[in-house]
Image (tube, rainbow, N blue to C red; front, side, top):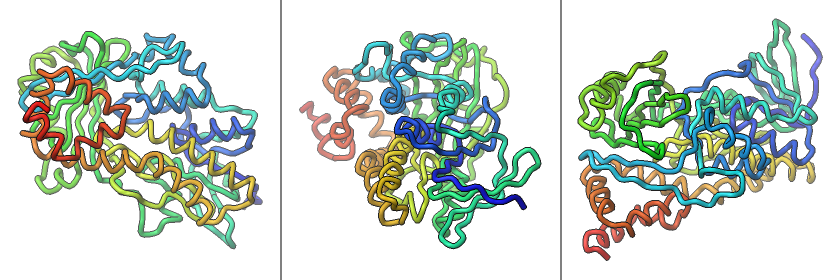
Length: 417
């Protein structure tokens, strides 16, 4: 067996969470190693919608990256709003609040993850990031208080030891499995299917993304996200507990909805499926959980940070990577990698920034169990510009979003207050 090589910082995974961590470590001049099982470009099953939170992190890391994206509308389609379709078929258009900087065209964008993740990967700074692809990790362990990683690359077995490991390796995280026994990521909180279609008609004139809260999928939804090059990302997500309890074949529900749902059937009459319908599990953020320990931190899906209401995970992956890098910088400065220090500098900061959002989104997910409530709010908002503006503000203002959790919000709508 080859002798071990020691590194201070090791990131496992080069998706958005791993790249986000790397961007900010490089910005602070901190050398680090990245191990990635795939070879880029590689695909990732996802809804392909990139939020304002993702744009915020990219802007903070390097604003010209966003300018580059918005110059390429043929590859990255600007996203300016969202259309909610209630179970009764009533549609509500909500434009995202604009707080654009020079060089930016929209609060977010849609892009196939194959392209977006490769864009992020291409921005890794070789001066500070030693990136190794096509890696198969055999074990992650702690020996004598030291993190040890055994992996294989190009037929050769290698060993690394590291002061700090960042688990950015997705919902099946080997880092989480190794270091958080009994607290592995919940791989089946929710399940999703994704397909690419051409020829979908009736798309919004301003390329709004669409969420269809059809009764068959509650408390989940079916989505239609317009993409560049005339394609759409179309998918469905549902709680795993409901799928199991009702013995639901999600693929059948998905295809039947496209063929028979009154709001969808004509739009997909001549649409063509491109490739296969693919599924994946989504580890949802529904409560505060440990995301670090002795000499390690978890980011993105490995930390179960997918938004429970929207299903969006890329923004929280990038954001958690940014916070992980800040915690690592402090850990190196103070020569502290103990669990108590990382909990203070990472867990506490993560939940201070995202905790309210996680709590509110988990509650909103539960509200989707009541189709009549959704119909009620959409019907009222369709007639009230003030209510539409309030809902629009909820995408950037957590205090406004928190209103949706309170009975007084619906009481005031009922009596037009």
